[in-house]
Image (cartoon, rainbow, N blue to C red; front, top):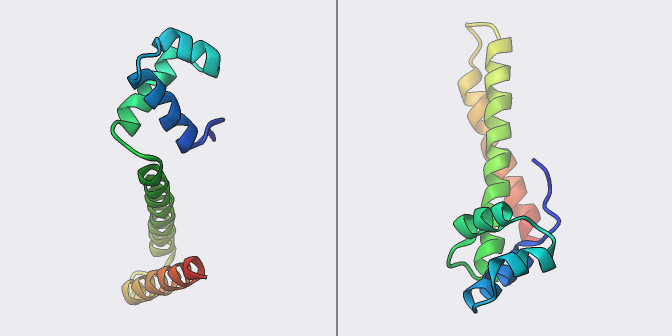
Length: 107
């Protein structure tokens, strides 16, 4: 996915300016983004504060990691013979990876 030029905090700042009464056309022109982008942001970040946006970003990145693990597990499962005990290995691998990931975040 393409990375945004604006941080979540900047986006929320633009949305707060619009709520304060600044015309959307003028806000988009001064910020350098389209009306469609503004409305997409408004749908995604409605009612959020900056701290909420950082939590959302963390959850989205964790979700992406879990999706990658699942995709790897499916490819691993397809590559192994039918009689191999792959289920227990998969669960142990994910638990270990999540454990190390949480320890790394704690540091």
